[in-house]
Length: 338
Ligand code: ADP
Ligand code: MG
Image (cartoon, rainbow, N blue to C red):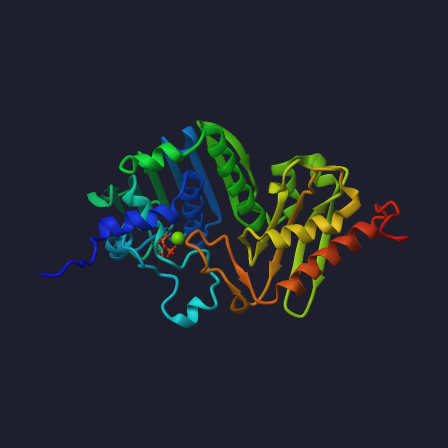
């Protein structure tokens, strides 16, 4: 008799869910990423009770083939990469094939989809097991509904802090998507009330107005800079308008929202003396780079990255922001004359 056994997928998916779907906002992030990867031009997100009651994401993307329905909720099943070469040059938001497997193992998940080369279908999963599969209406694209989140993981259910904190995190994720994908129209609704919507006309300045308000957009300065490996674009907001936390420093890499304190710090260094104590700037920046020099496969949530020439990028960000701020002659003196 042996002691070691391979775990059942229902258990392994729940284990993975601990990392992939930490909280409602991580589910929103994964579902919207799937819609983006499916070439959607319109993505609508409906949230009830900060996601603990329901999360619904509707897109007008390519849809899912009915023939793929059985693999949809399998872990490590993906249409996005097929070789290790692909893994080291990722251009899609997803690639791990884990999100739907994880989400469906800790909730009731319903997927309705129609890909025009196949037939429309609906699948309902409950705690990792398929409970319904039937034909659905012909509407190009995909709709995913997540209910009863964490019903079978009581510790996680309790961990989800306050509904207000969760709502804030969902808003943050949706704002970052909007900045990173100006050609997609996003709409976010909480408990029946529209929170914001973007037009999807490609105009980043309009998106800043839709999200942070017209007064912020009015004092947005364009940034465009290049170094051998990186190309930086976006807007920085003049230092008259600041915030009391770093959440408004939006930096993405190849249109993927990331978290990197070194890059955030290079933005703060660039504003330097222009900021009052404990005040932080508002910036919306994207760095384009060859996907081969950035590793996004560091953590299941894909927000942590490893960049091979980080010093070059830190310098590019700091110098180009300084240049824009100087060009505006906003810098009082301390930097110029010391
Ligand atoms: P990944 O995104 O890493 O491939 P997921 O578990 O998030 O893994 O999704 C599994 C697969 O389901 C995707 O590879 C894709 O083929 C399909 N899929 C999921 N959501 C959508 C969607 N909104 N539109 C089209 N296809 C989707
Ligand atoms: Mg995905």
